[in-house]
Image (cartoon, rainbow, N blue to C red; front, side, top):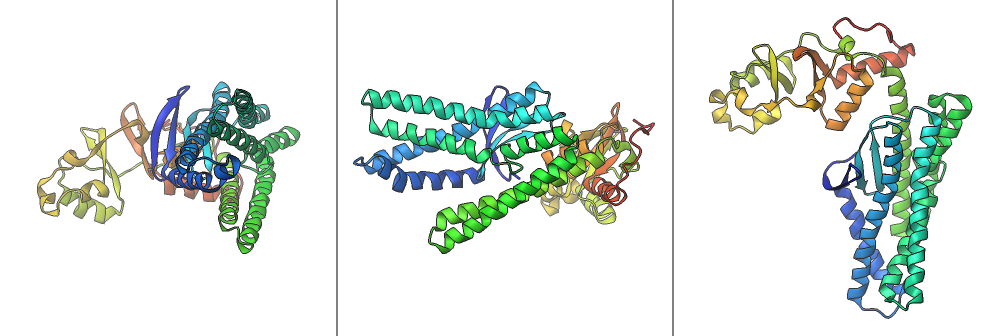
Length: 386
């Protein structure tokens, strides 16, 4: 989902980042607030004051979204669901859960925490606005407080729409899950509602553009497109989790991987390994131990004239935790790790020894087989290599 993100700070142990797309949103919001919203809300102030209010309100929006997502994250952590971090992007923010709730009650409480937090924040901002107004405080301060209070109120209400993956959609899924005891069915229904809501926003967006509201119409259109895509992706992920969970990677990995030695030249790596086996990434093996990985990307950073004299050991990347899988890890965990790290191949190690290589192609091939068969393979048949 995220292309370029920047780490901002940590809050309660959660890493808060902002995606590059959010800066576009911040620019549009600041301009709209300074040019139209605040001049209408608090008349008679200078242009510089309106821009100061706009920037303050935009920063307040950022902190409001972080507050909302932190509430989700704290409840998720309480129930043992690992959170990869909180990221702000053009359509708002997301708490990156590395696993789904184990029970409907956990889903309900985690999903409801965000809107409740936004409503509480809106109430506190309204109280502060009342204090500023009663004490004849600056109109600029009151205007920012009132805007942020209404924004948080609207954020809570929008997120309560029963359309997955919005918070209201997760609450809806939790209720359906509790009723039928089937998370797959509940996800399909809630995601269907999310898709329909997305279509509604798309239609309203087109109507808005045709009626002359280009900016508002385009935002509704884009949010609708995003919701439809996210709802579909949620269904796919739930299906993948059901079909792949419990299948050990030792069963589907390549047990005879191609490796390279650190003393091999870059020229030899390209000519004798890459062109022969048609992969872009290989583990580097030294005295029977995996010491790193090397890819065509690293080779490309070396001048061609230096290829014959440059050993792989000089350009390889040392092995890190994100490169490694245990043989008993299941296929869905492997797929999640690949998505999180952006890597398509992982090494499977046991006690430091290389057992094989797992690629995203291996996992997706098994997922395709499982979808055709709808009969999960060997859940209890644990491979002896694990």
